[in-house]
Image (cartoon, rainbow, N blue to C red; front, side):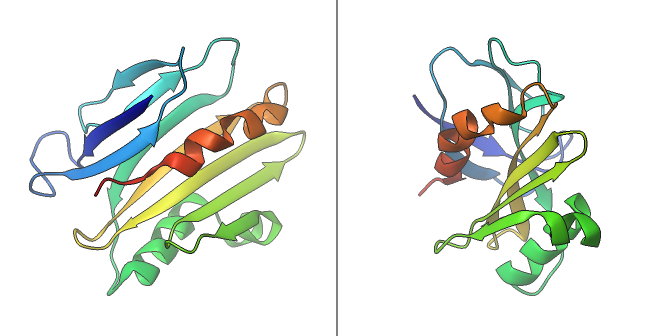
Length: 149
Protein backbone atom coordinates (compact mmCIF):
# COMPACT_ATOMS: atom_id res chain seq x y z
CA UNK A 1 0.00 0.00 0.00
CA UNK A 2 1.44 3.36 -0.99
CA UNK A 3 1.82 5.71 1.98
CA UNK A 4 3.00 9.30 2.21
CA UNK A 5 4.78 10.73 5.26
CA UNK A 6 5.74 14.32 6.08
CA UNK A 7 9.19 14.26 7.65
CA UNK A 8 10.98 16.83 9.77
CA UNK A 9 14.38 16.63 11.41
CA UNK A 10 13.12 18.13 14.66
CA UNK A 11 10.12 16.99 16.68
CA UNK A 12 9.80 20.30 18.51
CA UNK A 13 9.58 22.59 15.47
CA UNK A 14 8.28 22.79 11.91
CA UNK A 15 11.81 22.33 10.58
CA UNK A 16 12.15 22.34 7.65
CA UNK A 17 9.04 24.50 7.21
CA UNK A 18 6.19 22.35 5.94
CA UNK A 19 8.36 19.22 6.18
CA UNK A 20 9.32 16.98 3.28
CA UNK A 21 6.79 14.58 1.76
CA UNK A 22 8.14 11.07 1.23
CA UNK A 23 6.31 8.11 -0.25
CA UNK A 24 6.85 4.40 0.27
CA UNK A 25 5.08 1.20 -0.69
CA UNK A 26 4.43 -0.46 2.67
CA UNK A 27 3.77 -4.19 2.52
CA UNK A 28 0.48 -5.50 3.85
CA UNK A 29 0.78 -6.72 7.42
CA UNK A 30 3.54 -4.33 8.51
CA UNK A 31 2.66 -2.50 11.72
CA UNK A 32 3.49 1.18 11.65
CA UNK A 33 4.38 3.67 14.38
CA UNK A 34 4.84 7.27 13.24
CA UNK A 35 7.44 9.12 15.32
CA UNK A 36 7.14 12.78 16.43
CA UNK A 37 9.33 13.78 13.45
CA UNK A 38 6.81 12.18 11.07
CA UNK A 39 8.94 9.19 10.12
CA UNK A 40 7.54 5.69 10.35
CA UNK A 41 9.06 2.72 12.16
CA UNK A 42 7.76 -0.69 11.23
CA UNK A 43 7.30 -4.01 12.95
CA UNK A 44 7.29 -6.96 10.59
CA UNK A 45 5.75 -10.23 11.73
CA UNK A 46 8.29 -13.02 12.16
CA UNK A 47 11.14 -10.55 11.97
CA UNK A 48 13.39 -10.18 14.99
CA UNK A 49 15.80 -7.64 13.49
CA UNK A 50 18.00 -5.42 15.59
CA UNK A 51 15.86 -2.53 14.37
CA UNK A 52 12.84 -2.83 12.11
CA UNK A 53 12.67 -0.81 8.91
CA UNK A 54 12.39 2.93 9.52
CA UNK A 55 12.38 6.20 7.56
CA UNK A 56 13.92 9.39 8.95
CA UNK A 57 15.27 12.68 7.63
CA UNK A 58 18.37 14.53 8.73
CA UNK A 59 19.72 17.99 8.05
CA UNK A 60 22.87 17.56 5.96
CA UNK A 61 25.43 20.32 5.37
CA UNK A 62 26.79 20.76 1.87
CA UNK A 63 26.57 23.00 -1.17
CA UNK A 64 24.56 20.51 -3.24
CA UNK A 65 22.85 17.12 -3.17
CA UNK A 66 26.11 15.23 -3.79
CA UNK A 67 27.85 16.91 -0.86
CA UNK A 68 24.83 16.40 1.39
CA UNK A 69 24.66 12.71 0.47
CA UNK A 70 28.39 12.26 1.07
CA UNK A 71 28.08 13.86 4.50
CA UNK A 72 25.02 11.77 5.46
CA UNK A 73 26.68 8.55 4.33
CA UNK A 74 29.84 9.38 6.30
CA UNK A 75 27.73 9.77 9.44
CA UNK A 76 26.31 6.25 9.08
CA UNK A 77 29.29 4.25 7.78
CA UNK A 78 32.99 4.73 8.50
CA UNK A 79 35.63 4.41 5.78
CA UNK A 80 36.34 0.73 6.54
CA UNK A 81 32.63 -0.14 6.44
CA UNK A 82 32.18 1.72 3.16
CA UNK A 83 35.17 -0.10 1.68
CA UNK A 84 33.52 -3.42 2.49
CA UNK A 85 29.96 -2.35 1.62
CA UNK A 86 27.94 -2.87 -1.53
CA UNK A 87 26.90 0.51 -2.94
CA UNK A 88 24.40 1.13 -5.73
CA UNK A 89 24.06 4.65 -7.11
CA UNK A 90 20.62 5.07 -8.62
CA UNK A 91 19.97 7.24 -11.71
CA UNK A 92 17.52 9.41 -9.71
CA UNK A 93 20.22 10.36 -7.17
CA UNK A 94 19.30 7.84 -4.49
CA UNK A 95 22.05 5.65 -3.02
CA UNK A 96 21.68 2.12 -1.60
CA UNK A 97 24.36 0.87 0.78
CA UNK A 98 24.44 -2.61 2.26
CA UNK A 99 27.15 -3.49 4.79
CA UNK A 100 27.65 -6.94 6.29
CA UNK A 101 29.87 -7.60 9.29
CA UNK A 102 30.79 -10.73 11.20
CA UNK A 103 29.18 -12.89 12.30
CA UNK A 104 26.50 -11.94 9.79
CA UNK A 105 24.90 -8.66 10.86
CA UNK A 106 23.54 -6.39 8.10
CA UNK A 107 23.20 -2.60 8.13
CA UNK A 108 21.37 -1.36 5.02
CA UNK A 109 20.19 2.11 4.01
CA UNK A 110 18.56 3.89 1.11
CA UNK A 111 19.67 7.53 1.01
CA UNK A 112 17.31 9.95 -0.75
CA UNK A 113 18.57 13.49 -1.36
CA UNK A 114 16.29 16.39 -0.43
CA UNK A 115 18.50 19.29 -1.57
CA UNK A 116 15.70 21.88 -1.60
CA UNK A 117 15.74 21.78 2.22
CA UNK A 118 19.37 20.75 2.75
CA UNK A 119 18.48 17.29 3.97
CA UNK A 120 18.71 13.59 3.27
CA UNK A 121 15.96 11.03 3.83
CA UNK A 122 17.18 7.64 5.04
CA UNK A 123 15.29 4.37 5.02
CA UNK A 124 17.21 1.87 7.12
CA UNK A 125 17.26 -1.52 8.74
CA UNK A 126 19.64 -3.40 11.01
CA UNK A 127 19.45 -7.19 10.75
CA UNK A 128 20.76 -9.85 13.09
CA UNK A 129 22.50 -12.91 11.62
CA UNK A 130 19.25 -14.88 12.03
CA UNK A 131 17.39 -12.37 9.82
CA UNK A 132 20.18 -11.29 7.43
CA UNK A 133 18.93 -13.38 4.53
CA UNK A 134 15.56 -11.61 4.72
CA UNK A 135 17.10 -8.40 3.39
CA UNK A 136 16.05 -9.39 -0.13
CA UNK A 137 12.46 -9.65 1.12
CA UNK A 138 12.70 -5.99 2.23
CA UNK A 139 14.29 -4.60 -0.94
CA UNK A 140 11.02 -3.69 -2.69
CA UNK A 141 10.13 -1.46 0.27
CA UNK A 142 13.51 0.29 0.21
CA UNK A 143 13.39 0.68 -3.56
CA UNK A 144 10.01 2.41 -3.25
CA UNK A 145 11.17 5.15 -0.86
CA UNK A 146 11.41 8.51 -2.65
CA UNK A 147 10.36 12.12 -2.39
CA UNK A 148 6.67 12.57 -3.15
CA UNK A 149 6.02 14.75 -6.18
